Each structure stands twice: as C-alpha cells, then as structure tokens.
Amino acid sequence: MGYAKVLSVGLAGVAGHLVEVEADLAPGLPAVIISGLPDTALHEARDRVRAAIVNSGQKWPNRRITLNLLPATLPKYGSAFDLAIALAVLAGSGELPPVALDATVVLGELGLDGAVRPVRGTLPMVAAAARAGHTRVVVPAGNAAEAAVIPGVRVHAVDTLHRLVAHVRDGSPLLAPPAHVPADGPAGPDLVDVAGQPLGRRALEIAAAGGHHLALFGPPGAGKTMLAERLPSILPALDDEAALEVTALHSIAGLLPPGGGLLRRPPFQAPHHTATVPALVGGGSGLARPGAVSLAHRGVLFLDEAPEFGKGALEALRQPLESGRVRVARTRGATEYPARTQLVLAANPCPCAKPSGDVDCECPPLARRRYLGRLSGPLLDRVDVQVQLKAVRAAELLSTDAAHESSATVAARVVAARHAAADRWAATGHRVNADVPGPYLRRPPWHLSARVTTDLRRRLDTGSLSARGYDRVLRLAWTIADLDGRDRPGHDDVAEAIQLRTGEVA
Image 1: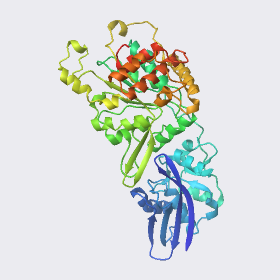
Image 2 (image 1 turned 60 degrees about the vertical axis):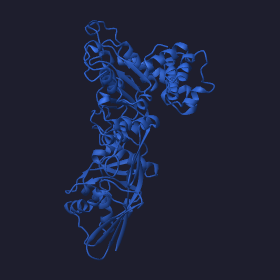
Image 3 (image 1 turned 30 degrees about the vertical axis):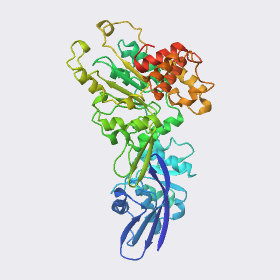
C-alpha cells in the first residue's frame, strides 16, 4: 500500500483555496475512485491521467486507487488538478520520491499524450498559493507569464508530464517563465474623432472623472456609440490592486491576451442586446462564470440600443450597480464576483428612430413612451448623468477645425480630478466621488449650505428627484468642482449637476 499528497488550488469565484490531492494505492481490483465533490470534468480526469502517464513512458499501477481532494466539503471544478493527480499517483506507487513535492503547488491539465495544457484562473490560483505561504508553483508553460506577475513566487513552467517526472526524479531543469510582455492590446479610439457634441463630451468627461454611470439619448448618428467607445481612453490606468483584480477575472474567463501580463487599461464590454441574464451578471452550470458586468470591473459596460435588451437582463443589473458585487447562487453553493463598473446606456428616442428626429417621426406618443419605458425608473435612478444629444449638423461634421480635444488632453484633467477626490476621501477608503455614501455628503464637514442646494432640495420635496437622485446630484457637483479646480461645489456646480441628471435647467 502507498500514500502520497500533492498540493493544488481550487477556485470559488475569484477566491482560491489550497487543495490537498491525496492518492492511496491499495491491493484489490484495479479501479480509480475520486472523492471530494468533483465535477464532471474532474471525474473524467481518471482517463486523462491514465493515458498521459502511460504515453509519457511511466507504468500505471495495477491497484485500487483512491483519490481524495481536501477539503472534501469544497466543490472542485475543472481540469487544473490533472497534473497534481498524476504526480500523486506516481509518488504513491513508488515511481517518484514524495519528499520532492513538499510545499510545491502544482497546476495543469493533461492531454492524452502527456502534454500539459493551460488552464483558466491560473493567476488567482497562484495568488491563493502565495497567501497560504507557498512560494514555489509549477504551472503549464502557457500560463507561466500570467503566474509570474504575482510577487514573491518562484514560477516553474512545464510543457509535458515527462519533463516534470524527470525533474522530480533527478532534478533536471524545468522551463523558465517567458520575458514579461504587456498584456494590453493597442490603444482604443480617440475622442478627437467625435464631431461636435459639446454636451456629450462634457458629460463623458464628468462621468470619467467621478466614476459616474451615463445614459446617452439621441437620434441615430448623433455619436452615442462613438462617445461610449472612447470613455476608456480618458480613464486613468489601473493601479496594481485594480490590475490584479481585472486580470484575475479575465484569467477565469479565459480572455487574457497573449503574453499573460497585468491588464493596465480599463476593460470595455459591449454585449449584444440579445444577451441573457447569465451573460450579463454571470452564471452557467457548476462554477458560475463571470458575466459582462464583472468582466467590465474597473472599466466600462456599454449597453448599446439599451431598450432592446430583455427586461430581466436590465433589471438584473440594479443590484450590482448599487453594491459593486455580483453574487450568483446555485444549488452547490454561491459564487461572488466584483462588479465595480461604469454603466453606459445608449438609446434612440423612439422605435422608428428617424434621423431627423421629431420632424418625420412616425411613432405616436404612446409608442415613444413605451419604448423608452423599457428602461425602468429604478434602473435609470441609478444612472447619474442622463443627457439628450442633438443630431450632428453639416458644419460640425465637415469642419476642418482642429480644436477638438484629444483623449490625452481630457485624460489629464480626469486624472487631476480623481487625485483631488482620492485625497479628499482618503480617510473613508473611497477613491471616486460616485462611490461615496450619501450620508457622508450630507454631514459636516462635507455638507453644502442651504443657499447652494436650494434648487436641489425643492426638487426632492416635489418628488421630481428621489433620495438616491439627490445624493447622486451631490456627487456630480463634487466631480464638477474637482474638474474645475474648486475645493467645494458652488451653486453653479449644483445647477449643472441637476441639468446633467434631469435635462432641466435649474
């Protein structure tokens, strides 16, 4: 009888948990039993591992093999345990010295030929191993660059089971991680391409500076999509903490670009209007995968033709927008993903969407109300900036004037405004105005005088603004003051915030 144990990591959402892969080889009828709440992919590991061991020139033990994954109460998903299972079986049969595997975390999927294939979620798995105090990890060669971004961890890459077995037996070298390659792709579109739309540009800049949600209404061709696609270009680059969060989410989803380094540019997600609730907020059988709202964490979620989305899908966004997290419950447990994103909605004024607007619109008033009514009041109440864009005129479209500001110019002002907000709210732990709870803004030392908020309080008393809307206007006013270099909002800042929120002049 032989026993061996190899360390690996399992994922529950973005949280990794250390898993001990135990192998017990006993006399009896040859069989492989896997315990520890494995999913279907893990149940099938017995066949993959057997073929990989044999095709790597090793002997498969003709015994009763019991594989246990501790902790047994934690559900295990995926094929990342294949390599650890193979090593545990070989060590338990006496083919490998068990001591050589102590304190080493092993990740990887096995092909039938013994090749070690990349797996999703390597970055959060390696981060979990580092938190548990294990600084030596073995990962597939395709995931080595991704794993190497975790500080203080020695990453060893492997491409075949044969290479890893030779390393454990006689110390032959493994592969080194490749040189760091930036993971971000080419820069996106520039704001200088947008013709006209001074109100849309101003709204976009304010949304970027304060982290506010944005809704753009207007006829086709007004520039709604162009403005939304350029929002990431004026957002600040992600810091180390945010970059790790974003990269981990994209690693779990299998969306990291070649190179596997940290994602420094805010992500941009633009799902089609036929997207389902699981596609937007996350789901799937077994381990719930992150949806578009989580993949847009620390970036932008753009819903073009927003009224065409299913009502259930739109309403499912309400809680994530408020809490900044998504909790997906399934029969085998709940999975939580971060979802601190900026929502951008774009919508035509009516179903016919005639370019000339009201002049040739064929829609009766009831049809127009019903169309925009697909965006519910509670959803729009969570959107800070709501602006009506006018159609672009010929003079604006054909102008050769080079006065339009580039994304770099606007981004510099956005960074300065965010630094001002971060310094002000440092004691509260918040980084942007949109995240500051309303009670902070209504109590000393941050409350605004009655003279400054007269129009705002009148709208609250008459019911044209909800309590949530009142707080969101205050946050907008602070952002406007930050952009214009003032230490506190004044009456004009609140008036502009009201106009951006309601479309009405205060």
